[in-house]
Length: 322
Image 1 (cartoon, one colour):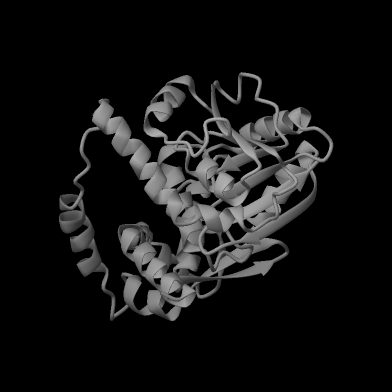
Image 2: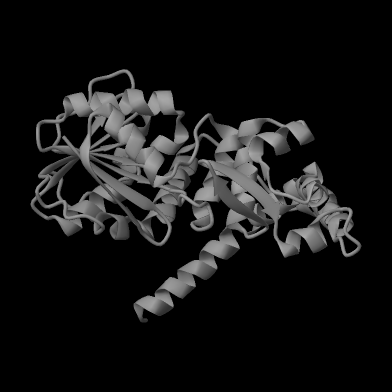
């Protein structure tokens, strides 16, 4: 299989896996009246104006609008560093309730009748079998992109790595495959570490070690490079700054931090995975997905320099040095 064929297969998998999110984003924007408000305004509006006009939160509406831009349901233009949103032809013709060709009633029927019937969300069973399933899910979700992210930068100068929140172990395995002379400490919550040890098969015990703790409260292990893989998007800017500043102080000169995240592009028109993550976070946490410039601002404020940013097929990676 060629790399092009593999890339197309992964795109198809990603589209199918996240299809329910695409539908729900479209349903929600139509139900709230986003497309009708923009159709009636006849000119682009800011997220603040749309939120005020529809009686929603600014943050929630901002993320919904950006996701709609990514799905090409809306268009966005920048004026004085502020986004102005307008309907695309698709939204104007088929998603606005007031359009003669509106499909809103059909979508509302699907959303309210069919969509809930497809929600087979089982209760989380706190058993050994459930934990094994949890770690298996973490590995499955990361194994497709982990090696790609590791290869974005030359990490050969970093000999000891600390993977914060890396309980699944997949990053440690892939890193040692790429850099056989390195070692990795997996730092995660004590209960996660205990379960991870039972479900993790290390290539070389001397190369991979575990340490339990809370990286917000406890001292972090010494390392040349700290890995934050899918961590920062779970937290608001204040918590991210707290963690990054702590890592900067722990770093020796020449050390660094590697951040791997679902990253929005500055125009919000690519990388649908980051939009999906943003919508999920709106429901579950105070975190958010960020653009490269927003990540760089956090890293710079924490003290890191020489910040490089790259983007793979799904995730983005930023490397900052002390």
